[in-house]
Image (tube, rainbow, N blue to C red; front, side):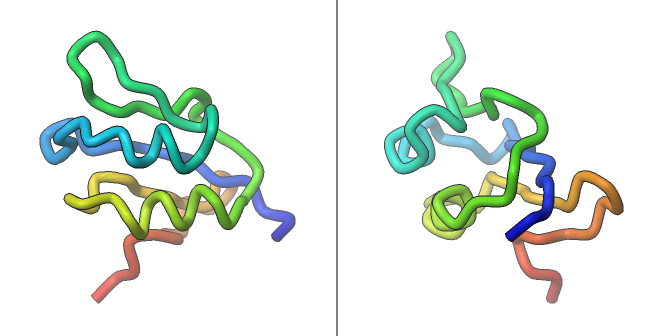
Length: 77
């Protein structure tokens, strides 16, 4: 994967389970409200980030291509 990704967390959905924090070792962190947020808005594409998004219990993590905005996750219906 040579792409750059933009990471976003829908704070209205996030329940603070911290699974993304534990799975990605530094790509996400919990804020003072115990909601996840990306450590950096953009990062290199990574399977570990995709797995964290896929395993978020409320599907609050969104990934798009940084350059084009094309959605990587969640898949469009």
